[in-house]
Image 1 (cartoon, rainbow, N blue to C red):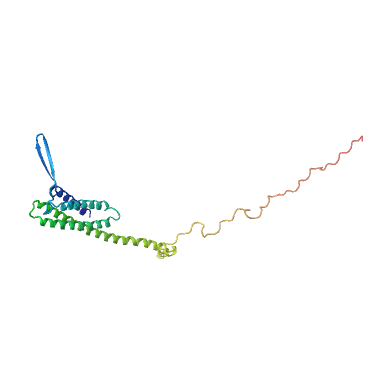
Image 2 (image 1 turned 180 degrees about the vertical axis):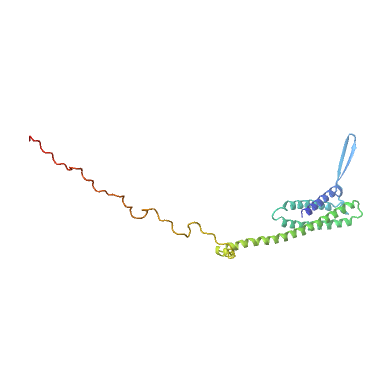
Amino acid sequence: MGLCVIIIIACSIAILAINRQHLSDVSYQCYYVWPYTTCYTYYWGCMASEDFEDSTPCSYMYAVGSIGIFSGLMTLALMGCPGGVIGNSVAAVFHVIWFAVAGSYFTDKYNDAHNLPLGNWRHAIMALCWTALSFAGVQLLVSVFACVKMRDRGGDYEERPNKHNHHEHQSHAQMTDQHPPPNMAPNPYPAPPPPAGYGYPAPPPPPAAYGYGAPPPPAGYPYAAAPPPAGYPYAAPPPPANL
């Protein structure tokens, strides 16, 4: 698509150059008279048709070239945008109509002005218009094909969110039923042993007196009262003899 637009821009530039340099009503003449050089510009007619006094063909040629350049540059600038393919299709339709009308118009002018000079440049203008029309047709076909391919890919992208949304509305049990655990029946290896202490007798009893009655007192506890010392309680001493 981009190559077609570039060729259309080149044809438009060539139309403007030929009109300005060879067919439009501008000419220059310079005279040298010592010590000065004097130049004159003459506006005398348009050689794009059989009537050189009619300036309409040359003005229309300027419009064909300038609008072709503007449309081509806008197409290239917007080609990378999200809607660039659709815009390229619209631009292609415009190019086909624009250069078809211009090619038909300048073909009639060329056929009517065979006897006038500069016929090769009028023929070049006609050929450039038909060349631009041909590449505009190629641009239209490629853009339509790109639009169709984009639509097909868009349908694929629209189906993917629906699949994910379908899973979101399912319960966890339904989603896990879709993926049952693997069958372990054909596994030839026995189950691993349980960890140490799992499924065995109870551990040994707790230490003595843990959760049981008080331990017996040590031997001889409580002890009997110690016998009093000999002569206890002591008798009162006898009074002295002189009392």
